[in-house]
Length: 141
Image (cartoon, rainbow, N blue to C red; front, side, top):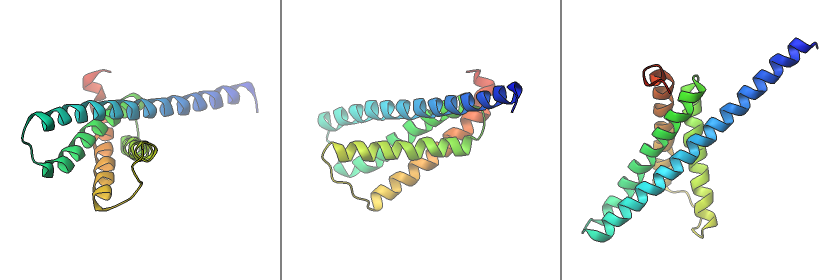
């Protein structure tokens, strides 16, 4: 292996590391947006007579929108493989949320609502990833 090969290897490794950082940023942005959205929704719940039946759909929508934004940002920076990177952001986001939920005392359980949320998260990540890769040209970020 010569010096040129080491330079290529180092560049690939740096690219992989930066991709992981962009995915991590996307997950962090998604979690922060979710926290803000849930805070706003909880205030609305306490100040109005909103039915408890709306909680699950609104939580899924807030989750999906936040993952869409996070995967859009991550894939826009990575600039390729939007489907894969978006799905990774969505899947890792759900893993983080379930781990935080388990740590905070809620029991870890999977039910129909969990699977709906996981599927919505991954689909939102895929859509955000596709949009992030394809719309970056016009948004110039």
